[in-house]
Length: 477
Image (cartoon, rainbow, N blue to C red; front, side, top):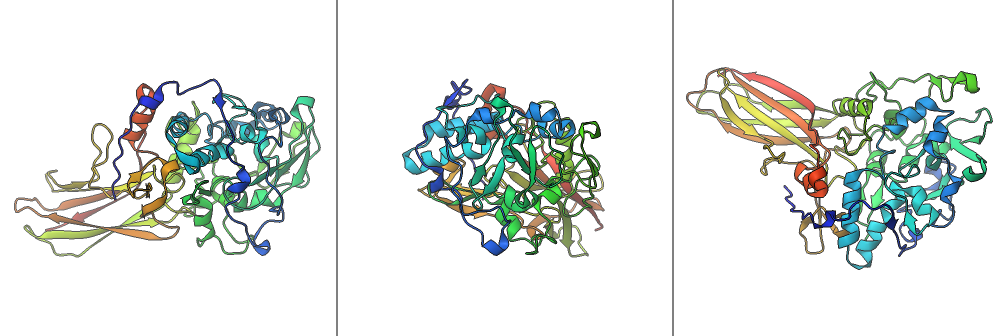
């Protein structure tokens, strides 16, 4: 199903505010967590305790990322180019969030828009201040001291975190939670957290249900949980961290590549850091290669995302032999998800675009067939099958306004270690010159260009299209 949505630009006026007024109309305990895990299948610090709610902590308790970078410079450098660092600042998110605030109607839609900030600016939400921080605030986004102040969670989905920060205003570091139990004591103490070593930590924010009507919006953790990568045994499962926190230049670390250890120091040896057989990387690489989702200057992160996409899937061609001029050429292109522990694509799947470009040329370069073409405005041919999710509103009409979604109209994505087959037909002209060349390319883009243009207006940028996989075959007539 191909979704065409027209956006107006009226919402752009006053888009970027210095402060964003928030009136908390709902208690997050109404919609977080989305589900509990059985005790036998959860880390020991997923607890049946109340989650942190607005007003439980103060923003002044949290250290800024650059403060953390003083002792963890390499980790800070990796994080500073990540989508986590840009989660609140991202102009596309801000535009969509502002549009939702202006157009959401009714309690259900408004509740859903409000829930966005719990993951995108968790400190701002948890502090309960009347105004959320500006998009450029140093404590916006998913910062170091948020993740490492998560003492526990109460389940999966919609950010059910339980925070235990220190007090940065008084230079009291408190306890930081992470993968080690033998860190030297510095301004803060450290405590091993089983949760931080498992996919359930990521599942706090990377499983999202509509806060008003509970339809499934983003289900990356659940997709992993139900995949072959989850063996049921934490010791043999391939967790989110095993791919997304092992990648660095030269090592894509996907399900189809090696995922080697990264020996090194969490903090410099001169500061008491211990050399360890593996230090988790903090690039947090996904599929974002565009200059909006990533902070400015994040060239390494862009290349890492490209490497990840190019090691996520493979293509196969299936066609019978023995064609001649005037025949109808029937063939299949098989998309295999060989490298992702979740569906392809995942995340905000109503915006994500994955599609096949297919072409057939003859020996003289004459084009006999083409599908999946992108025009000069960046719009995909409407007859193309796009692998994504389509949400519907209460009237059953397709919508990109996730806050107004009440149902899933279609979902044709590719599951982990699964495959999808797309069939094509082409009439071979009588004047075609043998041999023919059949080429299929699997493309990915984070969002439709027409949507980006509508949301960002005169500040729009061209979103790159990444060739994830390509296959070609010669056909003799």
